[in-house]
Amino acid sequence: MSTDADCIFCKIIAGEIPSFKIYEDDDTFAFMDINPANEGHALVIPKEHAADVHAVSEAAIAATVVSAKKVAAAIDKTLQPEGLNLLQCNGPAAAQSVMHFHMHVLPRKNGDDLRLNWGLEPGDMEAIGQLAQRIGANL
Ligand code: 5GP
Ligand code: ZN
Image (cartoon, rainbow, N blue to C red):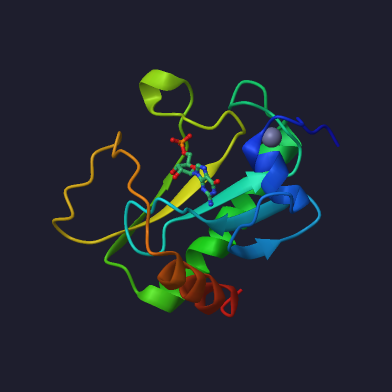
């Protein structure tokens, strides 16, 4: 499986950078976003390094979507959000900041007024860690 030694998400998969992991299988890895746009914001990534939708293999994107569905169900069960976006960004104009293909699983609430380029605000790590455990328990 191809990895990139300089890629922050490859390092998270390898455990070289800590993360609040909520799910892992042979092909994918899911963890909490540390700059959550909303409570429960999670990321799902293929273990195979690929920068974006153009580079990712069909097998890897398919596995990522299946895992995103599982994570979405667990977030729904844990937090009962009023809505939930599955979102994937490609290129700087589309607000991609990490060049390892990823899907956002983003809980929504009525009136949260989230824009697509929402900016990165660090979250409360203790609260994020607790949520990772609660969501992971529903997977
Ligand atoms: P993008 O803007 O590329 O679609 O999303 C990248 C996401 O990765 C952002 O929401 C950002 O908060 C998240 N992110 C960046 N660095 C880290 C990190 O080191 N750990 C975690 N858990 N998330 C990260
Ligand atoms: Zn990578």
